Length: 209
Image (cartoon, rainbow, N blue to C red; front, side):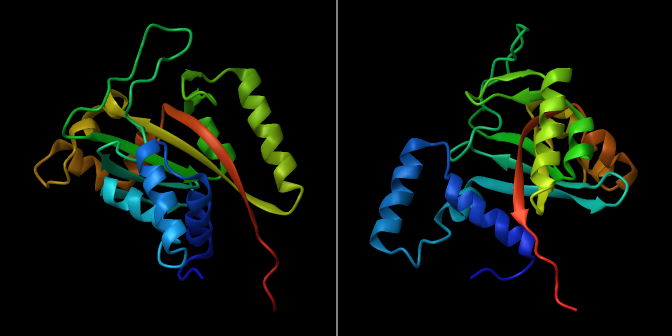
């Protein structure tokens, strides 16, 4: 049973179904669930929470129809900052250093998130420029999901040097990124040049009354 906002609860359930990228950590989670299913029902969420230190929240607003968080990860459970080749270019994302990697995780209305994406993460984990054909495919999939009474969210990420001044943000007031994050008018610019990572649909039945 989840407590709190239904969407956040549904996202936690989704995380438990998807698991983590690190094979050793996922094996540990499987063993925990086998030994004690009830007490380890949120094992994936717990592992991610241990790995990702939240530095800032860019709250939702009706203009950009999205929200995001800036986190510092050690990449023990997922690889937002790991080395990824950008298809069609010679660019790669640098592997995370020993102190971890900053990443921006974005969720919101698919059409709004998609408009601010320049790249797309492929099923094999590589990153490619977001082509018009890929964009149309995502729009079509969003429309199809919406027609089945699902509430659809789009997800995107931005990490490493793509974050600009936020690449080294540590949460301190003296860091130049702090003033940027205190200004809501800068949020849309921060949430730009993103990498699209996927869609999720949630059952959203009519509320009584």
